[in-house]
Length: 205
Image (cartoon, rainbow, N blue to C red; front, side, top):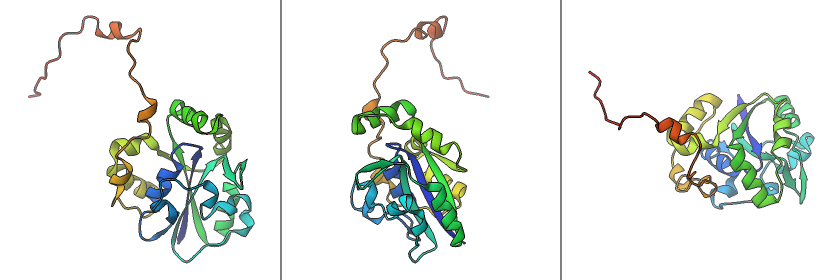
């Protein structure tokens, strides 16, 4: 059966990253322009018009499709909430199985990213929207920690073709790194260390 993987998430949660990763397999029809460009405006995503006009949904030739959208997203310069559920219904009526995967990123970092780029936080809009959707969750931090192993896991979880070829291009810099700074002191530090003996590695017999 044909499948449509809809990768969604709050603005700045890693939509471009996972759109690349999950459309990299040669059998997947995805956002091709992202393979050559670091960033492409959201309204240039191949399915962009359908998030606003789901009744116009049409599929190109292929068996597996990967579409991407953030909640909210910009279309023709206007911020709006995409009609993901309606696109999924249209896909079903055309004999294509929809799979919705929502990206999870640390809320504190996601908020900082949204305010830095867009001037305001829209996470609550996304949380309210996704609350009523039947979906899988994919983890931004898990990818950077487990790399190829996590992508292979997603393939099994989503029952969707994936490849780990070339993913080193996406893990040279962790996008969270610029938001994270050392905590110099916390009130619990001394309590944790109190009475603790110097660490020695003991071999288990």
